[in-house]
Every structure is written in structure tokens, then in C-alpha cells.
Length: 407
Image (tube, rainbow, N blue to C red; front, side, top):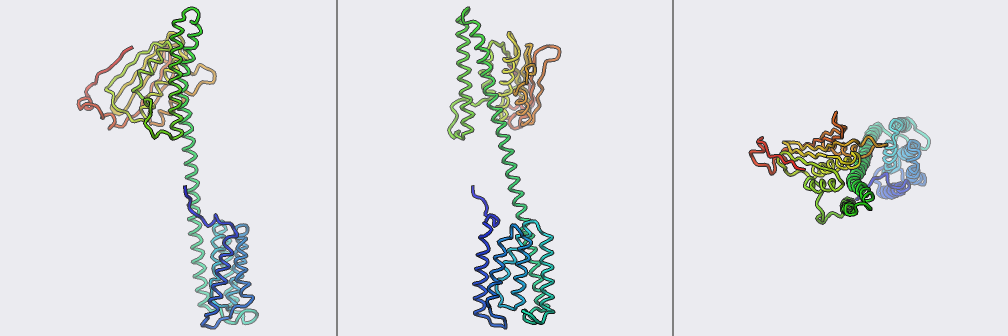
């Protein structure tokens, strides 16, 4: 990605030679074609033309001092009455550098004082190294207007530079924020992908070890469930890593995680020995990809918590309700445990809350009051246009749709 070039990015020594060359060459050319009464260039003149650019070498370390020296050199050149040339270039660079360095008051003070001294010397000094009466009131007015123009331009350059710097800081902060959000999203996704399947593997491994000698056929079933869960975990991890590597130009080989895979999710939970009942109310309609994925992960994490914490012989109920403008999800069980019972807690419920909050929904997770077990209930807002897509007119108008519930 290309970046905009900035004068401040140049080395400090790069500008003075250019300024010095322009001043010397242009003034020499003007001296050869002078048509009015003026002092021709001499050794002192060339020394002054070079001294200004040399002083610019200190414009970043000592901006005010560099400005004072450049002003004094330029004033001497003018009062000596040398041929007009671009001797003012050093002044322009010095003023812009001083203002840009944040020394605004000092810059105005130096230029104001220098202009006053220059005017007094030009008007009142009839002797010495200065040519008498070369500085008139007209010269003073023109010089004042020129100084104000340069100072105003320097202020505009400063303002533009500060805005550009602020824009760069804002972009950097935005990039850091997006990177942080992306890391959280990746961590949440990997947790949801791995926790469910590894929990299934853990439960089935315990079952297989317990039944290996007494009932080998049931142990074989548990091992088959471990194989399927590990295969599913590997496939989903590859999918996540493929997105991170940005190799998703081709169509995905596996179905995208969503409520369309609810039956697979429930079957894996049943393979872990959990009795799962499902209830789908309302007429299903297509969901935006983000909401569909979040819904699947919420139900997946809810069943993972049941597998890990509810205890043996538990019955879980999964409810999905398609409503007008919202999708309701619920996982509850009649077990004896809860995620908060484990030392250190876990990342599952905070991850669900982050997903739901990011989509503008609500979630409640906690023990069922008076009934034992645990309950997770989440509501996700769905754009109205999405809820109407695929719904017959009578249902979209509010007619009750059929409910489906099975074990």
C-alpha cells in the first residue's frame, strides 16, 4: 500500500543544498541582467546567500534559533541593496519549520522583532555597511505583507499536518481495534469448534474405558462416536484456519455451520449419552449468515455445557422459535451441574454473551429456578425482510405456523 509523501520525511540535510543552489544560481542570473540601480553581488553577498541554507540544517533541533539566523542573514542581504533574487526561500522554510515544530509564539515574536529592527535600520541608518535610504516605507509595507502571508501559510501547513497526523493515529487505532476484535472472534470460534467435540470425545472415552471389559460392543459404539467427533473437530478447525489464511476463494467442501445442521448437532449430543429433545416453532426462514452461525454456536455451546457439567442420565431440551423480527434459542437440562460450578469457570457463556451482544440480542444463562438443572435462553434480532423471505403471505401476516417437536 502506497503512503503519501511528506516533506518532513526527508533527511534534514536534503533541503538546504537545494535552497542554496536555487538562491545562488537565480541571484547570479539576476545580477547579470540587472536593469536598475542595485549593488552587484560580491563575496559578502554569496556568503549571505549560502549562510541562510546552512542555518536551515538546525531547523529541527533548534527551529527558533535557525529562524533568527536566517532572518538576520536575509535582512543583511536586503539592507545591503543587492540585486533582488529568491533570497526569501530560506526564510519561508525556516518559518514553516518553526511553526510546524509547535513554536508558534516564538516564531511570531522573532519575525515581528526582526521586521521592526530591519525597518529601523533601513529607515534611520545613513552610514555603515548599509546603502543609505534603500529601505523605504513602501519596502516596509511590502515586507510586512509578505511576512504575514508566509506566517499564515505556515499556520495552514501546520493545521494540515496535525490533521494528517490525527488521521494516521485514528487509522492506526482503528486497525488495532479491528485486530483485537478479530483475535477475540477467532478465539471464540476456535473455542466453540473445539470445546463441543472435545467434550464429546472426553465423555465417550470415559464410557469406552468403563465398558471395555464388561460390554465391549458398547465400548465399540463409544469409540465410533469418538472417531466421528474428532473428524468433525478437524474439519471445522481446517475451515477456520482456511478463512484465516484467506484461501476461501473456492466453495467450501463442508456445509457451513448453521441451524441447517441442527440434527447433526443433536445426534452428536445423543451419541454422548444425553437424551435430547428438540422443539422448532414458527416457520423456518433463511437467516443472515452471521445470525445463522451465532445461533448454531449458541446451541452447540449449550449442549457442550450439558455434556460437561450436567452429569449422567441427563435430559436436555433444545428449542428454536422463529418469530417476526427475532429468533429465540433455548437449551435447558434437568441435570445437577452448571458451568459456574467448576473452578475458574469457563469461556463458553462469556463467548455466547459476546456473540449475542454483537448482534444486538439478549441472553440469560443460569440455573433453572426451583427445578434444578441449567438454562440458556437467547434472543437474536432478525431483519424484517429476512423474516418474510420464504414465508407464505398468510404466515407473514400473522397466521399461526405449525410447530414441530420430537425426541
